[in-house]
Amino acid sequence: MIITVASGKGGVGKTTTSASLAVALSKFGKKVLAIDGDISMANLGILFNMEKKKPSLHEVLSGEVDVRDAIYRHKTGVYVLPTSLSLEGYKKSDIDLLPDVVNEVADDFDYVIIDAPAGLNREMATHLAVADRLLLVVTPEMFSIVDAVRLKESAEMAGTPLMGVVLNRVGRDFGELGRDEIEMLIKGKVLVEVPEDESVRAAALKKMSVIEYREKSPASQAYMKLASMIAGDP
Ligand code: ADP
Ligand code: MG
Image (cartoon, rainbow, N blue to C red; front, side, top):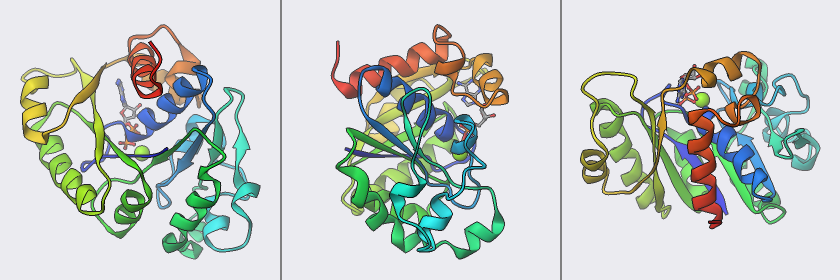
């Protein structure tokens, strides 16, 4: 199954969610490929300490190498297709090649998780179209939800239904929207609430996902719960 992790607004936790869900699913014995789909501002590779790997997705999308040459196994067991931070790499990449690249390897994995860029541009349209399901990441604020609604609608137009919503950074602010309000606005189910958790940032500083860094932290437990829901384990 191909899951695109996306949001309307930037900085809400897509990369955090992609990496953590990938690691959590692999803890449930699933074979997972995490793809850094944000080809202009790659971040996912950093959480697997693979941002300097070459070849990366850039070389795959420029037609220089086969996709299998750019997939690396991380010590958590997750397979990663990282993207480099190079501007040259971005310039030579052809996003239109992405669907073929993803489909070529998808059958080798139980789950392919694509960390998408923010916004509703052509790149996003490609990430949505290739996915079987959309996993929306939102924070409990109005703008985050409004943008998420538009994204969900365009995913549905592209034939990609919503898997559910990850409500991230809960408890960070006063006056947050509640779960029920959010479900009503998005017309979709909040699968899990991920609390604001300082371990998330501490892990990023160490170039790790939060689960690798501190498995018992509140955010890690939320992502383990999400993975168990998705993988269908009790
Ligand atoms: P996006 O990929 O949507 O831009 P990131 O996953 O990069 O978002 O997260 C943006 C910032 O917020 C990062 O600095 C990250 O460490 C921090 N962050 C994300 N989720 C949490 C959380 N639950 N608790 C604390 N900090 C978080
Ligand atoms: Mg990101």
